[in-house]
Structures are given as structure tokens and as C-alpha cells.
Amino acid sequence: MSFLSRLLGGNQLKQTDSNPVEQAVIVNFSYLGGTDLSQFFQLEEELESAINTNNVGEYDGNEVATDGSHGTLFIYGTDADKLFDVVSPILKKAKSIKDITVTVRYGPPADGVKEKVVKL
Image (cartoon, rainbow, N blue to C red; front, side, top):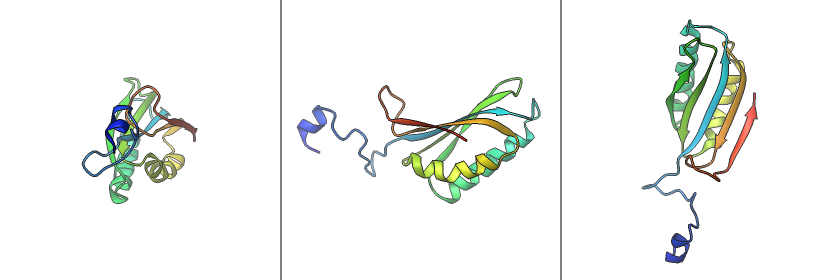
């Protein structure tokens, strides 16, 4: 990348082996199991296994309301579309969550980063 391009911020989403672009799939949902999170933990294991098997990123954890009513899943990698392709079929068939909204983010968490929102 040229000095002028770096100075002006060009190619901000360019991926290199030494500096991969962080992209994300953020999943918001309503949980149907209340405070019994056993079904949720099964879903997490299934997602993590699929992400690892397909080598598309990493499952980074969750935030679940103390009453178990809703939550968020955090998944990161270098290609948000590949992440989404791997996790969306699992989310669609999950019986323990509903009202699923997925934010597919094509860069680090910052203003102006391209995102798309998908309702499942």
C-alpha cells in the first residue's frame, strides 16, 4: 500500500496474514427457556463446533439477561459472510430461541463500518 493511501486511510478493510480484519456476526434473540439455560448451552456448543469445524472464526461468548428472557451471541472472524453461512442454519432450526436478529459487520466496531441486519 502506498504512503499516500495509508495516510488517507485507503484500503482500511484490506486483509493481510499479519493483520487480519476483524469482522463479526452478532446475534440477538429471545430465549424460551427462562432461567434454565441448558438448551441455550447446547445451542452454544453446536455453534462453536460448526464454527471450529468449518474454520471460519471463533465463538467469543454471550450475554444473557438474568431472567433468561433474551441474549446476544458474539462470533468473530475474517469473513462475516462465511460466519453467517455457517451459523444461520443452526440458528434457524434452534427451538430454544426466537425473534432472531443477526448483525453482520464487515470490519471492526467503529462508526461507518458496513453492516447488514438479517431477521431469521
